Length: 55
Image (tube, rainbow, N blue to C red; front, side):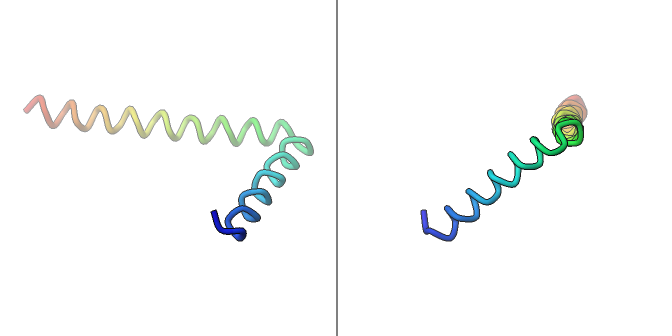
């Protein structure tokens, strides 16, 4: 991995840890929102293929 990618990756990890330590409630809310978006997306994809295959 080129050094620039490593540096950016470390900066993102440090920022994520800082955000969690400074405001854990906001970080938990953000993770919950992202989880809901992923779950709804997977459900919608499943519903699409179910409808597509049932016709």
